[in-house]
Length: 439
Image 1 (spheres, rainbow, N blue to C red):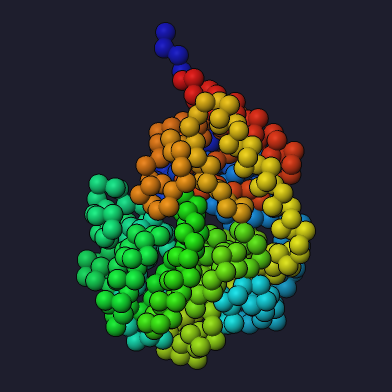
Image 2 (cartoon, rainbow, N blue to C red; image 1 turned 60 degrees about the vertical axis):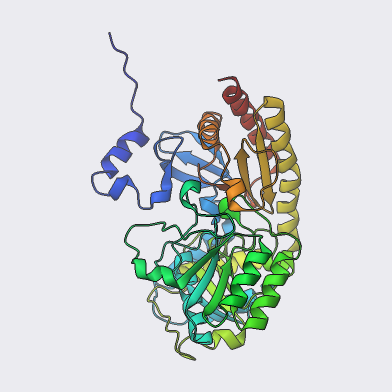
């Protein structure tokens, strides 16, 4: 007699969703490889997620970084309730828009003028458009392993297969999505991160074509890779000398290391910055910000047209003001710093005791677990050699221990996590690691 496994409510809901949603999801990245389907949640509270089958998890996905405050923070809930009480208003300016912009300008070194949008992809798209208008040039330099959204102008070489990436010192642009017109590739140059010689040679050779260099100052999307000492400083000096706009994509790194974002942490100020994820306190908000001179190219001041009905939606902007008010306080960052000082060494110790080879690469409130590596990576190709199968097995085992990781590259904790959460999570992580190591 064949044994049958009970089908969970999450599986049933996913099967139903497949009938009306492409692949059963509203975003491709929501498929969790450890499950073979999305992680279907009922609710979140603080540092916890509760799935539709009634199980509780300590959350280390934190909405891919958007929930830096945790789930349902009281200040964000109050802000949203206030916005609802005032009516669902779109396409109007509110006093709170300028309040949020001023708070960003006070915190983020590059921010003199601020333009709000909704998603991270929008902001990188409009940042490079602004740079093109400002410089009168069209080519954009990006870096292998750096992700800037899936629009046609930057949808290259975020996570290229190593056998299709070309030479290490001169990567070939790898198209991340079907449907990107081949003729657009002439407007993008892909370089290896942390290779100053390649950067300088390219910028000097093609300065009359290059409008912008866009970079994740901390490459969380491919291993939480830090720039080598002096690398960003040299990038800043070269772009300034050659009349090229420097763009920091801080959608993920923004507010992860402190109130002044990665640019303050690393001491390098770009011309333009993109912000998102944490900015909205868990709601859909992004921004591109920059110097008064370069942002002067944005409409209605200049020819780089940017507009949108849902830009700076009242719910999102009031939630952002709640987040930014908290982000101004030393106590907020002291708590996050304390969590990291306890959690990150604990992770390394847990994996070592379990006999599972993992390099823990952590900066601020975000980290990567690079299974099978034994040294800090300095570029995408070094990080991309991690053992994906081992990682997926561990993440599945961690789920069984009540600890939730998505199977993408980066993870993080929130201000809602406590030291007790960290200790409980480390117990579950070690138990999961031991089970995987023994299998």
